[in-house]
Length: 347
Image (cartoon, rainbow, N blue to C red; front, side):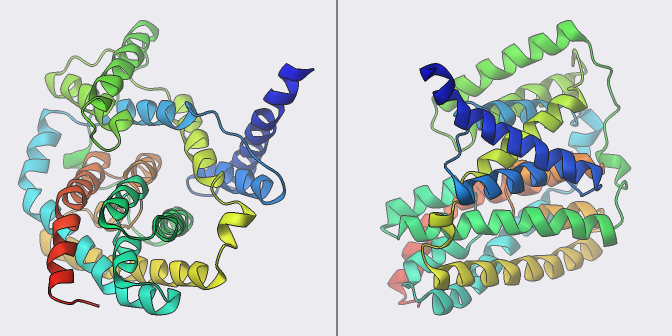
């Protein structure tokens, strides 16, 4: 049957992702559904082509945006305003840590300084690829390095945080829990989708999450949230995010250059370690919850670290504020900064 043959790759990929997520959930792996789905999809992708519906990741981001936004309230926003200097400092520290990783990546990978710069600095994968393309850097190199960095952070940071860091603290950044109301939930999903499409027209990075998050945040701050987002939908969003990451980890992608793969992995590990030290120093200096600062400075993507914060009940609004600030800084600063460094002959 022609219809079934076209659907088969999608069904096999979904089955592999769900099996991986269920196994990790049974083993109590932190961030089980995302990590399990990523590993299940990657294992399938290693042997045969996989297929993920193009609406999967945007749909997941809409759900996550709504879930994240509802964690903001009036008192939480006030606490974030007080923490703003530390949030801005964290963004600058993250970029500085990325610059420190550039020589490591460039030397190990044997790339030019331009490609090394956009490969090592921890912006979002899509953001850094776009910036690299504009600057004339090697897009395949940047894509591999940035993707592998996110994968390594997703595998390491939740497990390390669960094992060692105190979490569940930061009462100033926790909003009251709401009940799930079917009619209110349906309205939120519809309005969140409209907000995502409206913001997409502006060309902003990651409109699928930022639009619904802004809508949900506004409703939470005004005290008019109609419903909570059920945990089952958040788990489903984790599966979709894991599939989106896992589908990139094909044999061809990972073995394109063993030297580049090694450089990406080692520079990412260096970056994780350096950001961990900086996070501990910033938490000590600012008095902010250590676990939230660790997640905020972790060189992963905003959706992945936001999901980790929500799963571990670690001050989700504060973690999102860290990552949103860094994303904005990367969007507006990294291109001009490279221009300055290249004119100074930085290698």
